[in-house]
Length: 158
Length: 175
Image (cartoon, each protein chain N blue to C red):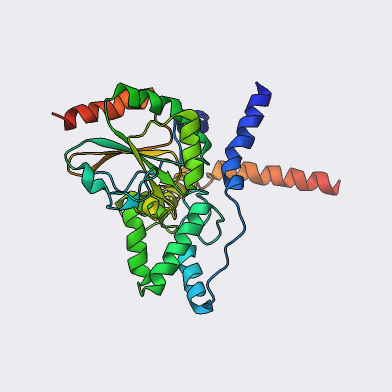
């Protein structure tokens, strides 16, 4: 059973390894190549999903970079290419999530947590402050305190 | 009560993580952007008759399945016996998109383990696959009479998926 588990773990990582390959020669226009890589940085590889299209060596990522290169050569703008890809792969292909209702929680969640934290902090501080009530000593207590202090001093000098 | 709060938070997080682990959640199942949209047009050469071409246009009026596969794809091999069964039952025509494959490799596989497809087209450079938003093989599309994609299965077709998801939709579409 243990062995099977280990095997499963290894096998689950295989697709990423199996798809890794030598990079294909790039086109000989460095300006274009720069643009292709810059745009690929903003897109997600759909095979190894935590990688950008620029960093991935998966076959599909290579194909997609080829397609981006081709479309750039054809004079398409970055925006048009992104639109072309999201039409086919959905917003998931965007490495930086867009701000829209499905991602509000992602974008604003941390601020909500911060606000909630501040709320509880202030509530706690207020509670604590309310607990501390300044109570002046009565004349009787004053005398007792003084007597205690005196004996303490007396002990020290003795 | 004071001490119960961290415990409750822990249980909520644990339940959430467990649901993601055990609920059949697969991060590779990206919801398709093409559901209820027209199936992208293409014209590709047929695998068996390279002089002929096939285009989804020809399927107007029919409900059909388009299965993406390759001879290099291990999961497709696993899926294959069920596809054979499916084609024998004759319930729905099954077409194949042979993705980034060599013609002779694809033909050899079909020769060896049987050919469940009515017809196969060759997508040598994978451009049609990109048009269909394919992330990995096998994937299967259900396309209706008007050429609209109704369903996409990422991964292998199984008897369960067929019976619970696809066949009810086919039934509805054929009404």
